[in-house]
Image (cartoon, rainbow, N blue to C red):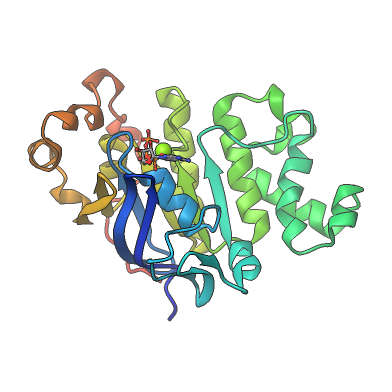
Length: 278
Ligand SMILES: Nc1ncnc2c1ncn2[C@@H]1O[C@H](COP(=O)(O)OP(=O)(O)OP(=O)(O)O)[C@@H](O)[C@H]1O
Ligand SMILES: [Mg+2]
């Protein structure tokens, strides 16, 4: 089966800065992976390249998702639009249109499938509206469907973004620091929602995180970056404070949460039990 995401020798350079340095990796369908690393280690750049929002250097190989090309040797592939339709994106800053309703923001997820004109005019059919409402119910905010997006809390807005990825029919969701702007309780709720979405729909999930506690609490596989390189790719169980210090030296502190912010263990979904990847 084609990988949810495949990066082949991907690099990205700005002047003398190598933001991503010869990264190859493969993420299977339905797999859940945390991407950790200190500030500036290249997480966002990698996610932008994986989704076709940024072009890799021409010396790079290709980026593919479910057998479709996203980019190759620094150029967008002819299949990129089809590839992108299967990739849902969630960002730190919610990326919703604040003046539009929650419902409309979620319906934007179907725009990949319907004509832009119909979308611009808000001509969504009943079926599409039902799907959007079901997705909102799934992330627990159906009761807010008619509110303007900006009236929602950060955590609720993030769950709207997740509902939008569901409506889009994404098979891979890339989330770049989705909990960085949230208080611990909302952060936990958003992580629970992402993992439940991935489990229930077999959606592959890549989440970049600053805080290692969340990575080890919610994911079986962790990829750690440092200075644009993958310095660790393996089971979350190996990520201990001592190992982080070994990987990052003094900058490991940035990745280790002070205990008062630690993930409430009892409340975490039982995600650490290993289940077969579909
Ligand atoms: N558009 C750009 N122009 C020049 N340099 C850039 C650009 N975007 C990122 N960089 C540099 O590339 C490196 C990697 O940045 P990136 O944003 O990918 O890191 P990150 O791991 O996401 O960091 P953070 O945890 O702070 O979000 C950094 O040194 C950054 O300054
Ligand atoms: Mg970033």
